[in-house]
Image (cartoon, rainbow, N blue to C red; front, side, top):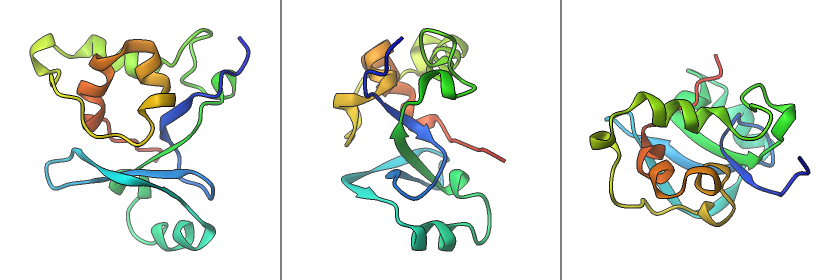
Amino acid sequence: MKNDHKSCPSAPMKAGTVLLGIVNQDDEIDFVSNITKINEAFVQSAKAGISPEKRFRFAGSCVQSGCKQWTGTRCGVIDRVLNSLEEKYIKAHLPSCAIRENCRWFAQSGAKACGVCPAVITDVT
């Protein structure tokens, strides 16, 4: 499959990724309204303390087969999340999102992906 320039809404933090949201006290993502690219100074600062991916969500380019979550045709993360939840737990409203237009999960699963997205905490530790 040729790269179709989709964004991964759960990328590991590195310089050049986008800050998508901040984890709140309810362990959900509060999405930021503006696209803010992460620089090396942010990376170094965020590495102090607990894993940055437990405190923030980042978006980057979907690397498809370069990612262990890639199934061969799609991202397995959102499929596993949607398959593990009962329909009643999927939020009906679409949260505000800076990357929806190019989001891999939205392209694959539509509004249902957006309904569970705030509950996904990326933890690469």
